[in-house]
Image (cartoon, rainbow over the protein chains, first blue to last red):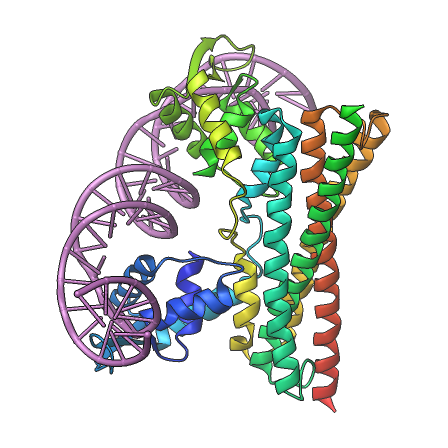
Length: 188
Length: 188
DNA sequence: GCGCACATGTAAATCGTTACATGATTCG
DNA sequence: CGAATCATGTAACGATTTACATGTGCGC
């Protein structure tokens, strides 16, 4: 149900589906993914439920834009979600399941390749977030503790991303070394 | 689609639905959650697809058990999933979306409560994993680098859980302090 | 003219949650 | 005798993915 609430949060500032998808890819992607088609259908449903309203406006490029904004009812839903406390215990990491069963391949070199590939992907994620932080820091003298409330909370999520990717990167690096060590010992 | 593959991995050792749910709650819960009803339906579908077979056996308590095991076809599916490389970019953390939009409540004390609650839940998770590790370490002299391949890979996932929860716990602690500081400054 | 970015959607299928339904055994 | 644990499932609904379908404007 969280996509609903994330869309409501985004739509405190009016936007169209396509622009929301871009916000997702930039900001929300590292903790929630969504496809364009799902966004469109969810917006439609939220409007039917009275949590959003929309109006058509012409676009410079391509067809008209349908601009959605949150209603009073939608805002109540958003606040209820926030006030109910953290939603935990529903996280999913498919790749951890893969690591758990990797021994099924019975080939440590494939395990090594797998973990190296994970390491590379955590490194990319971490670098993206570091660049975001560097840019923010250099363009905003209030960073990180003299921000307004909205930016302060956004900064907390950025910090979490940095902390998490740093920890995972380190874990992946150590795992790669440990697998290398096992490979060498098995060769003797 | 990963539930399919996790079930296939578990069923390299035959088990019934109820026992699988228990394995989930103990081992897989920190990276993949599943309800009993979903497990039963997925087992049924996987059997229809020929990835599993089942046989009925009487139980000491309650009704007969339906014991599933993996077929050659299922094993190929499992290996294909492992060989395709890490599935990344589909992680979901509802609570991070909440943190991002928490400013909507316009009440730092509620933000503080929220983050404290998150902190407590990360601390619990971390302690559970530490206990698992402590138990394993003290009961198995091969821990952590002289384990067989299967246990070694399981241990890698445990390490990841420890690394992740430690990082998140630290992040939550720091966030709580930063919010406290803001609260005090606003009071002046 | 081709491909890319912009822009919106529908259809079908699968995945996942919630609620309902049933019944035996064990422990206090 | 009541609650917890063991044990399996269905029905209805809601969430999500994948594939399909359409069309404009801009730059090379």
